[in-house]
Every structure is written in structure tokens, then in C-alpha cells.
Image (cartoon, rainbow, N blue to C red):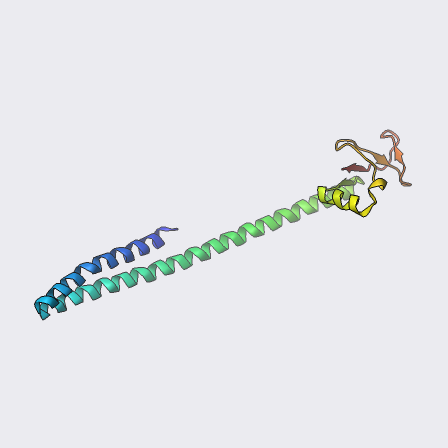
Length: 154
């Protein structure tokens, strides 16, 4: 909450509390039948009510400005995040194109789905840090004789 909103809320609250004083004077003057005092008290009450309304309007305006600023900040942050994601994607694609290396990771949900489908026996069991290299025909080869590296992380 910025200073303008706080000023508006505090001002409106204060003037509404101060409004009670002339209203008490008005009711006291009404009991006594003093119409001049009643008119003065109502003038003061109207003045404080007007001030409270002005502060309320100011608080609403400042709140709208603050909300708009927050929307703009969020939009900029979102654009930065999108741009960062694009850059990361581009870097990843460049690394894939330049290296002929494919990294595969199977998520926990993927593992469960694979087991449920009945094809889990076709997937080789590997340690998470183990790297295997395959040739063009799909046979595992030693790292020294490999021409195209292919690693799978499970």
C-alpha cells in the first residue's frame, strides 16, 4: 500500500470520527431547542462529511494507480520470464544441434505410466549417472569407439 492510499484511508477515517462531535452537539442543541446551534453543528458535520468523502475518493484513485502499477510490473516480469525461457530453449536447441548428443530423462510419472503399459521390460535398467553410447543401429558401444554420443538418464 502506498502513501497516497494510506493518507486517503486515514483521512477518511479521522474525518468520520470527528464528524461524531458536531453530531453530538446537534443532538444536545435539539434537546434544548437551540436552532442556531443546531445549524452551526450541521454545517460542521457537513464539512467533515465532505472531507471524508474527498479522502475516500483520493484513496480510491491512489488504489487504482497502485493496482495499475502492479499490473505493469507483473506484465514486465512475465515478459522477462518468457524471454528467459525463449533464450534457454534456444540455447538448448543450439546445444542439441551442435553436439549430436541426446539426453533423455524419464520422470516418476513416466516410469509409472511405462510400468502400467506393460512395456517396462523393454527399457534397460540404468543407474542415474551411468551413460551409455549407441551407434546408428541402436547397439551399445564403448565410449572410445562411439562416433555419435547418446546418453540416457533414467
